[in-house]
Image (cartoon, rainbow, N blue to C red; front, side, top):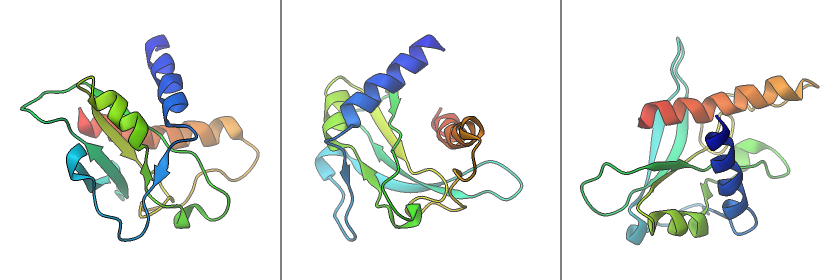
Length: 139
C-alpha cells in the first residue's frame, strides 16, 4: 500500500501544472498510441468511464501507470478529457503503459460527480473506487 501511495504522489507531481486537456475534436496522438475507450464500471447498472490509453510500441505486457485527474472549476460534466502528455512521455520512455480515466460525472463518463456534502473521506473513497475499477479492468 505504501508503494501505491508513493506512485500516486509521483504521478500527481508529474501530471500537475503541465497536464493538458483534450479540446473538442482534437486528434489523438499517434506517436503515443493514444486511444480512448468507454470502460464499464462493474455493477448492476454499469456506467461507462471515458478512459484514455497510451501504449508503448511492442508486444507487451507492460507495467501500468494510472494517472488520475483533478477537478476544474464549474460543472465536471464540461471538464475536458485529461491528457497528461508530459507525464505520459516520461513513463512511456521507461516502458510503461499509461491509463488516464475520467471518473464518473466528468467529461463523457456516465453517472454523477461524487463530491457533494461534508463527508470528504467518503467522497474521496468513492472517487478512488472509479480509479480502482479501471485498474482492475486493465489488469
